[in-house]
Image 1 (cartoon, helix red, strand yellow):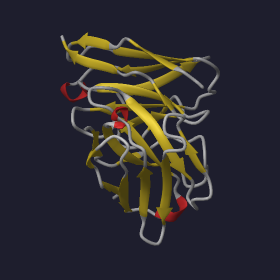
Image 2 (spheres, helix red, strand yellow):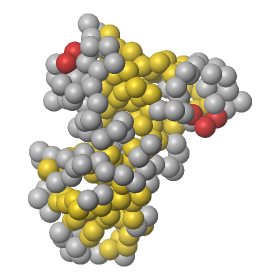
Image 3 (cartoon, rainbow over the protein chains, first blue to last red):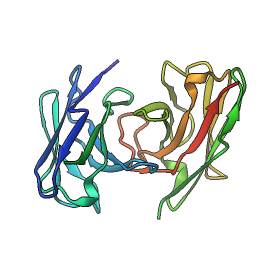
Image 4 (cartoon, each protein chain N blue to C red):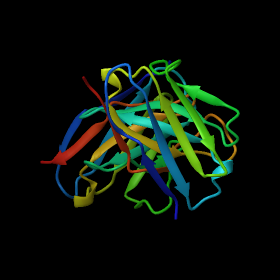
Amino acid sequence: DIQMTQSPSTLSASVGDRVTITCRASQSISNWLAWYQQKPGKAPKLLIYKASSLESGVPSRFSGSASGTEFTLTISSLQPDDFATYYCQQYNSYWTFGQGTKVEIK
Amino acid sequence: EVQLLESGGGLVQPGGSLRLSCAASGFTVSIYAMSWVRQAPGKGLDWVSSISGTGGATYYADSVEGRFTISRDNSKKTLYLQMNNLRVDDTAVYYCAKGDPVATLGYHFDSWGQGTLVTVSS
């Protein structure tokens, strides 16, 4: 089974900060990686797919990148609406989620 | 607009059964692979099961294999999850999610329902 290790588990940041979340796969997943945002009591929302493709309607301050088995979600300038939990997901071999990163107000 | 509406959750005793439904609309349901994902209280997301558009291919997480059965009725635009021999650690919000119109594997989930809560407790 492919394991996804996400870091950090919690991130404290201020509005306007540049934020980076990392996800590492236990083996090669090519670029079959997605990022989701989830707010309390709500369903997850797709942000990025195929490692770096921005889902329609998602603000351009969100971006994704890949280097080998390491994947990064970057928020270029954190906005009040961005305080949430973020999950990575591999879909190269079935589906596995990372543990999540909670982005909280500093 | 894509809409996914789950129902069927509730309180059930360990060893009991429950059937979840997910009514889909706003897209050509019959050609899209669909999945179930769950989230235990205060925990992360956990893939449960997936099914191809035709229903001919099904996949399960090891933790539910042999206990849960995914199915679909494309004439009713509805996805199902039959859950048998439920355990306390199956307690979670269960989400249905929309996948890919072609692939049976290797796809992300681009739309999610609001979820239905399953509580397994004596």
